[in-house]
Length: 83
Image 1: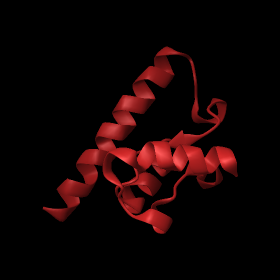
Image 2: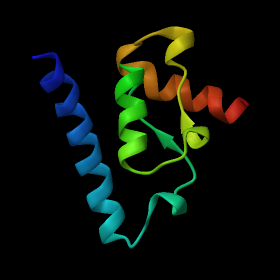
Image 3: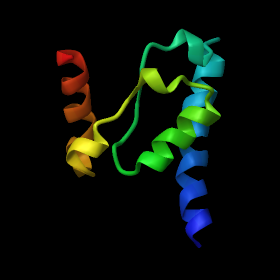
Image 4: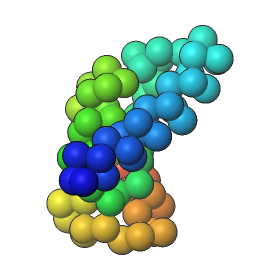
């Protein structure tokens, strides 16, 4: 069950991001930053890898705050802009 619960969000993120990028004619190198819900670092890393997105362009503050639920993206975005 653990593999399925890990693979499912990875697949969902990949499909939800990759399909619009393809329609817009974008590739990961044309995107400045990747900011996902800060629930699980393994999922964030796996999605970035599947999208061939460089880790240095992935915004993550999960190690600092943990899963902050609905505030995870605004917190991470604010922190990234300040830095």
